[in-house]
Length: 232
Ligand SMILES: NC(=O)c1ccc[n+]([C@@H]2O[C@H](COP(=O)([O-])OP(=O)(O)OC[C@H]3O[C@@H](n4cnc5c(N)ncnc54)[C@H](OP(=O)(O)O)[C@@H]3O)[C@@H](O)[C@H]2O)c1
Image 1: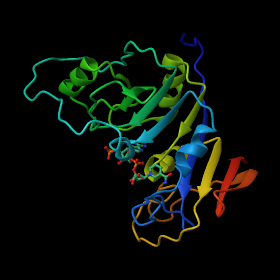
Image 2: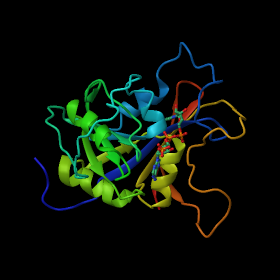
Image 3: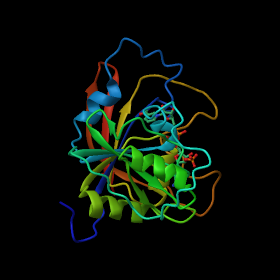
Image 4: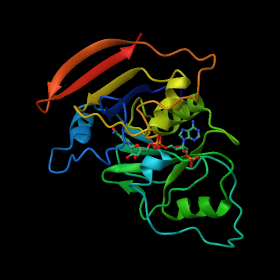
């Protein structure tokens, strides 16, 4: 049942980072260990999780479903597909690069967050798979508007943002993160250019860094720390 009032969901960003803040685990050799990220994430109960296009492409289809030369014209309006799921997974995908075999990732209903740059052929693909989509702007995303729509159309009151660094950085820069949850892995990565927990802006402009207040610290998996912060 959708809300009548527009409200921003409470936003918790959850990540696993190396000691030097990096998030790509290519050289961490974590194989054979528990799912540090997933196990801790599951303990933060939310109505859904949201990731950037790069991260979502790890979960979406590897096939091409978009029909070339399609003459269909579909208006750039939000689309709420039929769904039974109680929770959602949301892709920040401004140009419509993620394609779908189904409208579910495990138990979550898929919602694509788009700009009006996307083609009708792409919208036709999403509709054919009953994937929901919302528009967050003409060419650029207004993330506050995106959160309002997620609340209004899907009744999402609490949302986990699960990376990657660019999506986290965008929400941080927009001042939309209420809590930050970091699983700190006892590993130094050192890869120059690899994404870090928050990728907000190149160089130093007028932006000020964001401070948090420590909420809890827990030692997990012997040598890891699970740090939880709230916005100051
Ligand atoms: N360690 C962890 O806990 C963890 C968690 C999640 C992911 N990861 C890793 O992080 C890596 C990916 O991170 P990433 O930072 O490269 O990518 P990402 O944040 O997953 O995705 C970035 C993309 O999302 C879109 N996007 C994000 N913010 C936007 C905004 N404000 N406006 C418009 N578009 C926006 C853009 O898509 P377009 O390029 O299509 O415009 C952008 O290139 C992967 O290796 C993944 O495995 C690690």
